[in-house]
Length: 137
Image 1: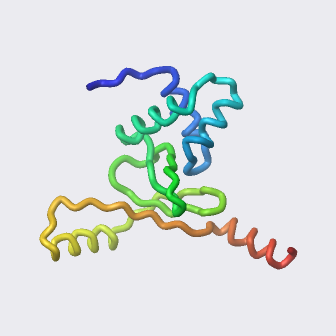
Image 2: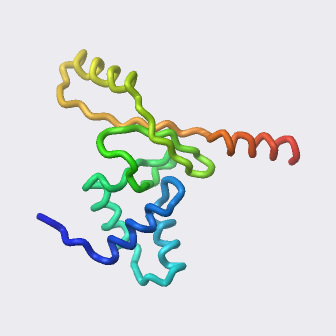
Image 3: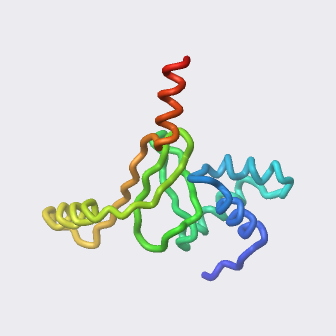
């Protein structure tokens, strides 16, 4: 079934593109609410789900289990480095992970295996800020 584009989905797509990294549906909704768009939280969830399904948005779960979204910069399968503090995300190639996933699946008789690998940590700026806070706090 082909879904038509709506102004609400277009507006969610625009706001997602303006976000500096991964963002939750609730935080994206708050940004839209501040702009008096009238777009409801359920509409934001539906729009994000559609964008992710069509490859226009990346979706992942934070270490706390919350779904996070980001406008997709790369088409096709890829991985991310994500800062736990500021949300900065960097798309990375992970050739070693791809090879390991294929070998592991094959060793257990699996075919058509898929995987999700995202690495959470602190970016260089947040690491420096934390060190500064520790030294001066």
